[in-house]
Structure formats: C-alpha cells, structure tokens
Image (spheres, one colour):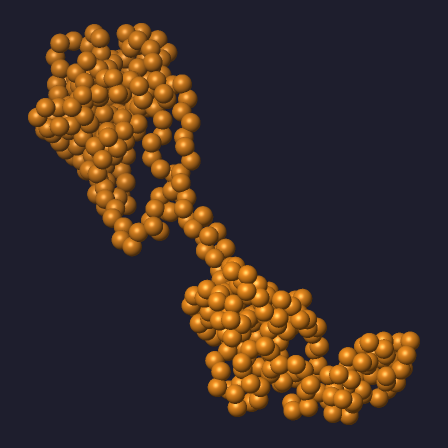
Length: 405
C-alpha cells in the first residue's frame, strides 16, 4: 500500500496523522515524534516522495513522469516546499452543449480563484478555446506572461509530485474591472447647468436681439436691461469729479499719464469709441481709472470702467443689467480635456470684449469723459463695444465666442 492509500485509510479510521493513535488529532498529539523524512507532524509511513505515489492519473493522454512533464507547455510552475498540503479529489461527470459527457478526476481547491482543464478533456468535449495573454502570479514573487486557451473550466488532478506547489494563471476580470473604473472616471461629462429665471431671460434676449454685421460678420449685441434705463439718474457730475481726481493722480506720474493717454487714443483710433457732441441728456457716464500690471507680458496698463458707480437716483448701470449665466467650463472640466488629447493648443484673444460691437440703441448708456491735459476741454465719448466693468460683459463676450465656434 502506498503513502497516499495509507493516508486515506488513516483518515477513514479517524486516526491521528502523527502517531496513528485514536481520540485526538495531529494538532494536539501528545507524541513528540515527527516524520523522519521532513520533520513535519505526520507519521513517516505517510510521507510521500516522487516515485512512490499511488494517486490516480488524470484522464488526459498525458503520461506521468519528469521527462514527459518537461515536454509539456503548461500554465503551472512548481517549487519544493517543506511540508504537505493535501487537497481532496472527486470523480465528476463533465457534459458539453451537445450532450457528450466524460468522467474525470477533479482536484478540489476551495481557496482557488481559477479553474484548469487539460487539453485532452477540452478536445474530447469539443469545447471552444481562444488564445489570450494572461498574467501568471504565484505564491513566490513570480511574475511572467503566458498565453492560455480559454474554455469552460474544470480542474483535473495534476501528475506533478505532491511535494511541489502550483501557481495560478490570473484571469483578466480584476484588470477589466479596474479599466472599467478608470474609463468611468476619465469619461467625465460636465454636469448640466440649471439656469435661473434671470439667466434664461438673458439667453432668450440674446437670441432675439443679436444680429450680425453684414461687412465684418461680427455679432452686434444689445445690453440685457432688466429695467428701463431711463430711470437711471444723472451721472455726469460724478464722472467729472472722478476725472479730475484721475488727472491729479496721472500728473504725479508722467509715464503713467503717457501710457493712459496712448490707451485712450488707441481706443478712439480703433473706433471702439467715438466723440459725441449733442449734449449729456439721455446718456449714462461711467467713471474710469487705470491700474498698472508690471508683471504682464502683453498689456501692462489696464483700464477699469466703474459701471457700479451709483447715479443721482441711487442706481448704477450694473443694477439695471442682467448678469447672464456662466458659460465658461469649470477648471476640472478644462483639466480633464487637457488629458484627453495628445496635443493641446491655447491662445489669447486680444481685446476680447472690445471685439463685440454694441447696438447703437444701447451705446449711449456707456459713455465716458476725457481730456488730454488739465487745460484741454472735457470731451464726451460713447463706447461702441462691450465694456469691461459692466456686469453683462463676460456673458456677452463669451456667448459670442461660443456662437462663432
């Protein structure tokens, strides 16, 4: 009787694997003796080595023996360990879709996550198989790649020595799940924006009132008033006082005065504003000043139009205008879009707001005062384009940009 049959007999008689005694197990065996071959807690008569096995072979045509085992390309690797791990086996019947069946010997490993089947059984049952590249992971730090045949899987008992251990072929389900989660995260869609009543009214107003210039093709917009602008109070006096204060500031800094004067002249030369001489009635005057940004690589002088300055009625131009919805993408969406392409282009639109003309019917509500020197007369100018500082300017400029795109 071989070691394996002895083991089965000992288990059937419910004896201790270490001393072959009764009424206790090997884990609490009182005997201090151990296997003389491997010093593990089982009897020497139950020790199994290569060559004295009596385990039934697999039902495949593979013949046992080290020479034949080395000739086969199998998705397993073995290494010697100190001790035995005994797994249960069973004779099972396998059936395919056509009704053909086969009795095979199966090795039952309750901790395994994968199943294997011999090529002979797969061919006998005519199971479909496809090749794919899988990652092979073992108990030791082993990591390699092996191409296997994928088929409905049952595990046949291996003919390798019992003192050697198996490594498993990792299936692709964990990797597939990981990739699915990755693309779910990367497939970010910016949430649908819910607009307020005022924002919806602003969108509707833009569609109804915006026209295109027949010559330049530029959009010509109307200011989205939510109240009648005729209720605005008188604004000339406050704009004049702010101009006088600005002149005192500029006279103390000749270089700043020169830069601001050049800015105003450029504004006029580009026809972004024009002189008006038919009185100040029916007009709104916006105070303005400038700020210097020495770290700017393009425009170091920035003009600021104070459309929030209150008039004599206590209301400002911005109080009369709808702000409009935010049309720009949030920073997270922009960063995700940067990661979606191999090459990214960025650009700066020069004088973006001033590229959008304002309808002549609304231009009188955005006027300014200016004079080149304290001795020169004060002139009235009417701004002809979307003006930075008005509450609706970001919406109007961005909306035109998106419409053009």
